[in-house]
Length: 177
Image 1 (cartoon, helix red, strand yellow):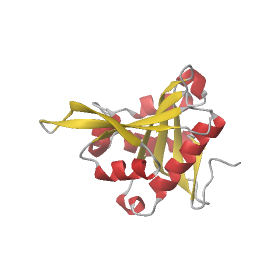
Image 2: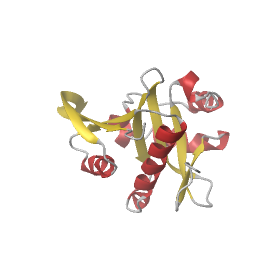
Image 3: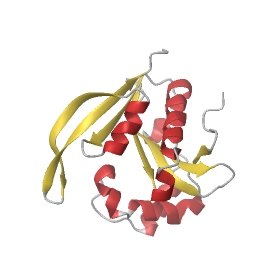
Image 4: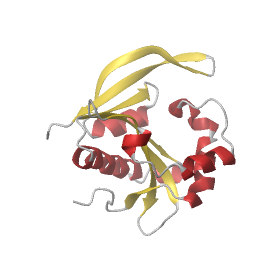
């Protein structure tokens, strides 16, 4: 089974020529709240990150993949497995699509579906989870579409523009194992 290629997109490892894309994504303050970023990243730091991106998920405890449209190498988004825990067979999932024009094309849905298959069938994970602001209706809809269930609320978890917001945790159990 080819797990990283879908009908309209594919997921690939980060490449050195992704420097400007990753730099732009990491420094986009509009998504800092979902990425737990608090300070800007320099090109130097992003370059170092890309140079070390060859570490496998067992070493790095995370995997970041570029989301690309079919037959088009440049990245249009990123999807991550983070806090990879091989002992308990679980990882967190994060996804971000760079431009609004791509957000209405089901790219996020296809990317998440590919990542779930990869995590469950290639990494043999038992569960995936996502932390999502209760205000982020689009992300909640995306994750629940694939069977993620809300299992709890972290009250006043995110401080955004001087206001605290709750964050929900969603979980997907691999029922195939």
